[in-house]
Figure: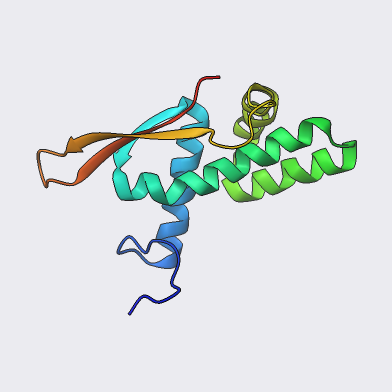
Length: 127
């Protein structure tokens, strides 16, 4: 029974799931739109929105809080994420300064031809 069990397992081990999540969030920040399965899109949407909220709130914070927010984002995105963190805080965060959540949208695309998996497009909302 799944009583009070939250989240998705995606038939992967914990390390594989974390690596996939990190990679997909990096792709969304870099390309602002990715095509994936519906379940994976629903899995990464809240994590992506929390990172964007972190960047948005760092705009009006003092210097120490802003640096701490960048460090948190860098830890979440993994090694080699300096340009992505810079884009997140300098471009994406200010873009949503007046928006209170709902930074991403999931559009259903229909089943994939090979295995019938439900495909979706997850993208950043244009303001």
